[in-house]
Amino acid sequence: MILVLLGPPGAGKGTQARRLTERRGLPQLSTGDMLRAEIAGGGAFGKQAAAVMDSGRLMPDEIMTGIISNRIDVADCADGFILDGFPRTSAQAGTLDDLLAGKGLVLDAVLLLDVDEEALVERISGRFTCRNCGEGYHDRFKPTAEEGRCDKCGSLDLERRPDDSAETVRERLRVYRSQTAPILPYYEAKGLLRRVDGMAEIGEVARQIDVALGGESGSLFPNG
Ligand code: AMP
Image (cartoon, rainbow, N blue to C red):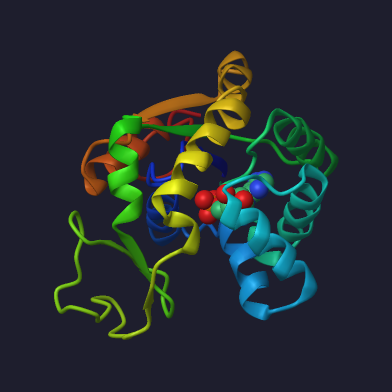
C-alpha cells in the first residue's frame, strides 16, 4: 500500500506515520527526517538544507523528488510505503505521479489530517523527540513518564527541532497555505483524498485512519 500523509506542520503526520509503520509494517519516508539526517552528517548539502529549514521555507522541488525517487527504490519499499512530508507542492505531486507510473506503482490514498491552525503553534512549540528511537512527545499533551527519559527505549537523548520556534512555525504555516494546501483539490479530484480529524486524541486519529483505509487489515478494498 502506498500512502501520502498531508497536513500542516504540527498536524501529527510523523506520529501517525510511525503508528502506521508499527501496525502495517510499511516504512515511513519522512523527507524532513532525511534532511535532518543530512544536517547531522555535517556535509555541504546538510548545511544548505539547515539554512532553508531554519527559515521555514521549502527545499527545491528537483532535490526533493530526486531524494524520494532514490528512496523508493530501496528494497524495504517493495510492499509499499508511507510518504510523510512529500509531496509539498503541486510540482512535487505531479512528479510523484510520474515517478510512480514509471516504476509501475499506484498511489492508494492521501490522508489529510485536518486541524485548527490556531492550535498548531501550541502543539508544535511543545514537542520533542527521542533521538534514539524517534518516539515523539509533547510538554503538555504527551509528556514522558520520567522527566528527560524516553518511555519507549529509556534514552536520555531527547531533542527539540530548531525549526519549531514560534517565528519559524508561522512561516511554515504560511508556506503550507500557499504551496501545499493547493495540492488538496488535485487529490480530491482523483478520488484519493480521505480526511481525518487531526484535532482528536492520537489513538482516535489512528482509529479514523484505519477506518479511512478500510479496516485494520490494511485493505482499501475489503471485498475485493
Ligand atoms: P517536516 O519535518 O516535514 O516538517 O519538514 C521540515 C522542513 O524540511 C520543511 O519546513 C522544509 O524546509 C523541508 N522539507 C521537508 N520535506 C520537504 C519537501 N517535500 N519539499 C521541500 N522541502 C521539504
